[in-house]
Length: 286
Length: 201
Image (cartoon, rainbow over all chains, first blue to last red; front, side, top):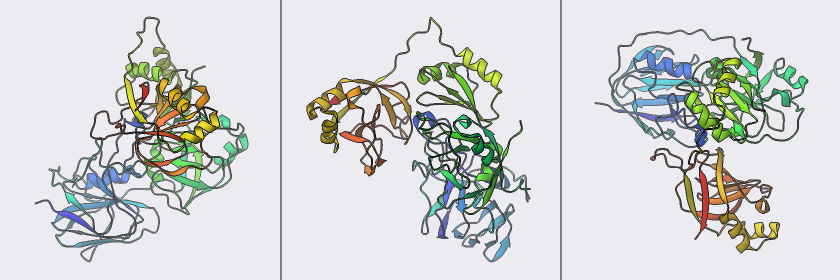
């Protein structure tokens, strides 16, 4: 019988996230979806679910969850200490989570987001085809706070094809970018600074955008653009010259020029950057 | 001159487009399945689910989407929005424009508008066609909360707030019409190209 997972403690709201609701941007609806989509998909594969299933997106660890029926589960993301009913389990390990047991997760020492998947998935509200909670537009499943619960769907799942999946991280702190569409609006010095100077992730960052602090990117052309479509990974530059990397819940249009864009392969990496992390940008050679 | 600007590895931004709505309609016919079009004020973004094609391929795509002489004028839907002209800024707008309140209402409600693009919030359409006399810069201090259904103007645009949100536009009135509803298909009442008329009630 499908049961529920109860949130006993959570430092930040826990969000249901799947692959998002692509296709509606021209109506002003962001795509949303798991910020670190690679980890989210891996967690689903580990428990034998289709990758389109929703998982729990946990920000900065520090959660305590209880399940009222025995489930098969996995957590993907940065290395972190996890205990299930007092037994240690590793990230990227498939484990049995017994009925009534508590799952406790520490704060990760690096990285930011974890994805918890349960075999059979969650029974959650879908809006425009997706359970993803969009923090900008307030669409999708409601965020989970202590005292809240999410129901298990108990859907049929395939045979798990992985039991343990260590993954190698790419070069830490380097994001590959391509210049454009509006690099011509900036001074050559700004373009040079972007690809040579470090930028620090600011505390105001969230799923809408990662705010960076570093050498200000000065403009050659003043003014604003007529509103134009935004894209995930875009480095939008407001008048203070400090770039913002657009996250999964970014607004669909904006008027500040975009100097460059992070390539799609590095979007999941953006989901693991936390305030204080230092990033560098490297031109993608294609 | 229409030109495609690079936008990461999964998109191209078509710039300097006179009518992005019309371009998007033509591009839709020649785009591969899974690609998405997002319309801006003077631009149209082509998003791909995987790696974007190279510049030559995108140029070909845009060329294939050139308007043809024989092209039939597509019939855009007309949406009529009934408005109670009781907005908080109605008197201030009258003062700034030198019109009477009755004239503001009549000028705003007699124009025909067209949704240029959406953004800011789901279902929030930027309506072009605002008469010159009503064009005012945004409020210097935005409101923390603009009620859902607020009919507003700023710069060259008019808009209806689909949901309550912060906002810096001048509020002319209130509408009870639905604009964004995830239970409907499509979920937004307005889409790029929709014609809009306001009717004073």
